[in-house]
Length: 194
Image 1 (cartoon, rainbow, N blue to C red):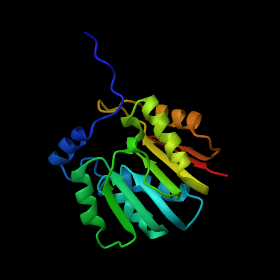
Image 2: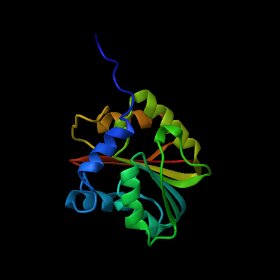
Image 3: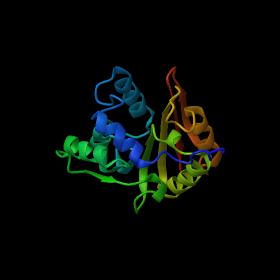
């Protein structure tokens, strides 16, 4: 009997990963990640934002950078363990709120002038990601930016490749793409609401 392809990676899979290691992808220590964060920072068009949403924040490594340039940051992750680690890490930042949330539920209430979709898109099918992208676009304020960044390698737990994520976003988002970069190991695109 053939099994149906997965439409998303469930929270329990991420809980198991974080149970084995507090920073399983080395977001806090990897030179690659630090370089990627620098590229993300430089791909943003402003030095200051009012309200940012970062789904899939993991342990909060990039969230710290966002906190330095945003009046308010709403960071979420599907893993309770990751959220607890991120809360510890970011407890000294009063402008950051971290909570457990499944991205399939849509973004939190309100408008955002920055949404950072980093390293999470490939955990969904094209159909799921399309619905998510539509909801994220709807949460952007006027002149708001959506920055997507994804690794271009292969992993058994990914449903989509990084290129498929960005091709899907570019096809589905009702927004003009205003910046694009392709590096050896990751791809980055920015869309802006007019």
